[in-house]
Length: 112
Length: 113
Image (cartoon, rainbow over all chains, first blue to last red; front, side):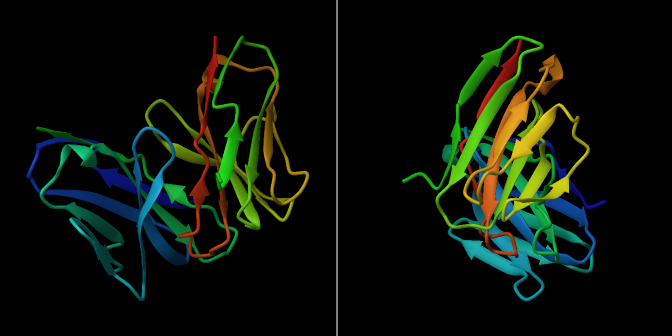
């Protein structure tokens, strides 16, 4: 059974800090790893990492995939209160109909 | 236009009742899903449909019955509701096999009292 473990489960930082969120996975026939941000409603897509694209960056957010260690990190630099959310990591297997399997998320709170 | 829409957004009902949640997507996606998010925010797959056919049915009580009248709709009917069914239910759809194309509905918060 595919499995995703995220750490830490929750994190409180001050504005301006840099944070690193961790995700490790076990999946049969890995296709991709995805990061989502969930505030009050539905998860919104951040990044997708595959074997052919192991690092992504968008503004203050960046993510790296380590296929050897079966893990990924999500970095957020110069955090702002608007970054407060639950960050979800998910993996997808090769089969087209395989659903995303999610970790339990990391709840990030950024305080002023 | 909302890409994936769920109704209702909130549902409060008594134990033992039967209720339905509706989901519609206007993205032309072939695959639709139901996920349950518990109080600890864990998103867990319940069902997956591809072109109206059931593909995945995780270990979900048979009180939960999905129905897909066409590939744009996936409804969830729940019989004999229990307290433990209280959660947020998310519908999602996808076309991209890599997963990037996942679009979630805004969720239905079900509270069973």
